[in-house]
Image (cartoon, rainbow, N blue to C red; front, side, top):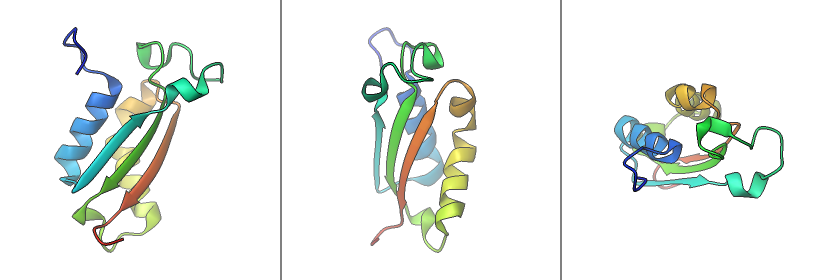
Length: 98
């Protein structure tokens, strides 16, 4: 969490993913700095960045689900963040043992 007490987009995404999927592993990476100057970067999400993220998650709830079903579940969960300025979301979604 930011020192000011205001939750970042990353913090919100991490909290939602943790609550929804109870992951064994979760890493939400803000890669916005790699996209400085690209369309969708400047001022995104109202935080001067926070527009490009990579999510790495391993959770039992993804067992038996197709890649499309996994992506759809995460995109649906994070719809508010995507609508609010997240320009790119790279997903690495696995079930335990994959």
